[in-house]
Image (cartoon, protein in one colour):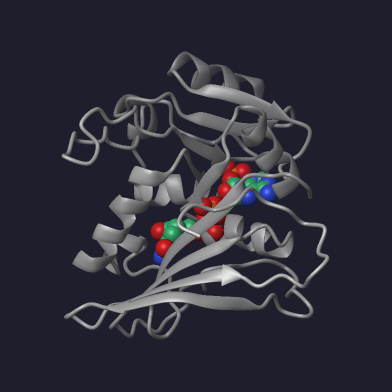
Length: 234
Ligand SMILES: NC(=O)c1ccc[n+]([C@@H]2O[C@H](COP(=O)([O-])OP(=O)(O)OC[C@H]3O[C@@H](n4cnc5c(N)ncnc54)[C@H](OP(=O)(O)O)[C@@H]3O)[C@@H](O)[C@H]2O)c1
């Protein structure tokens, strides 16, 4: 995969590796995590998310940025780009009804035409791709001019990106909770990556409530063919 956008993934996890509590990740979030999440969204050009997360968390569009001293005339908020093989998104959901930017719905011709039509009628931009591999999805975003992608999960989508070695940066928030049970890890997929991809710790911060904010960058071997545009703040 060459010349694709830079991909930052942001995930929150309990200490025992759960990515949700009570069905959604909101049950894990802390004040420090919410502050980080908002700041990453402020810097994002497009927010990439899997349909499972949209359905589980009743996703809505990204809120407009508020003017500040640093940014008196903020640009429009980034769109949400949803990866879905089924196009099984509710046209009456907040993704379409509570948004400034039209959501991008990345799917294939195998998704039922009636669902694709209903999404388009609800204001979504339906993008029909040949497949939903990371290379194709990121290529479609690059073709729209996006060079910085913020991936908000969930585990299936992140697992695909990990398998394709398309995660350049991981913002992992560890919250001081033990959840137990069958909850998924932050990345899921049929096959583990062999050998595992090495990440380099690039920043860490501990909040007063015990939340740990970790920033890791992909440590690619020299000569790797995978390229991404230069990330910000490097
Ligand atoms: N802790 C965190 O930071 C965090 C972040 C995000 C989500 N979550 C949690 O994770 C859970 C959802 O997990 P999930 O794994 O279902 O989430 P997901 O990755 O957001 O969604 C999976 C769905 O996305 C679509 N998809 C993703 N990649 C695809 C591909 N390559 N080809 C075709 N379709 C693809 C499919 O949708 P269709 O079924 O429509 O085809 C698939 O069923 C929820 O409980 C959510 O709260 C936690």
